[in-house]
Length: 308
Image (tube, rainbow, N blue to C red; front, side):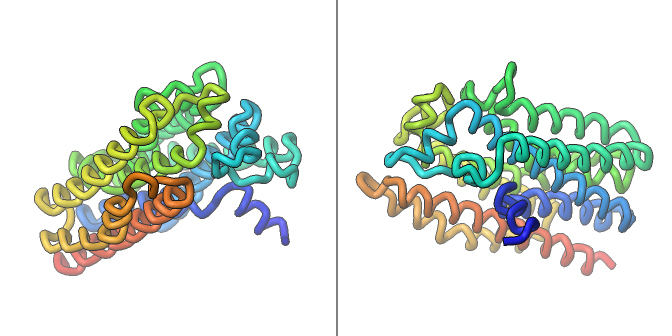
């Protein structure tokens, strides 16, 4: 295995398309609504945002390893570890993993500085807030990801939905648009759903080490129903996008994509809410999020085509 393949696995890069979709959505919104598009700004934005996402995943793994959360899940028969495994298995040393994490953050910061010089103060506002939430999700003294009470879910909605869509629009135009709130909600909620569902896989070991996620605080049953609420809100947000003209009205047909995920929820009753099915639910949530994201991008392009 070459170094690039190792980095892809160590950084859990399979989640990065969630961020990339948001960047494309914001960039397309600037082009479709205002005719504004700079390919170099778009490229720098994509690199910076994806680097920030990778940093958040890696710093999360690093401090979950240091807290014992990932090691407990790795060694337990009652949990499925969702980290990269590069620290728990010893493939990379803790020091090497930390160095790579900070190097990725450096890339994100360089991109942010360039975008600030090109586009203005909005980059510092969104970038600063995003950096804070990525760093202190599991890093002391804040560690709000260990507190529960919905703080991590709100951070996911902002960091992997609202902020990247708004930011990628702002760097193209130099201002914000109220419609961005609606445009960013589907991917923001779907990404929140995806990350929320991964807590089911190791909630028992999270509880052992003091990581009090909502699944730990509420228990599996109540959290499972909350997961259904998140999916319902995501579908409702797509309807809102159509109603407010952010996507064409026939974009509501995209809801059919959620059918396999809805069926999965309906099948998970009683004893079927086991680790293996929760793992399937996680990956199906990710796949559904990516499919919705791709279709929303297509609908934005169709809107541009009809408006020209």
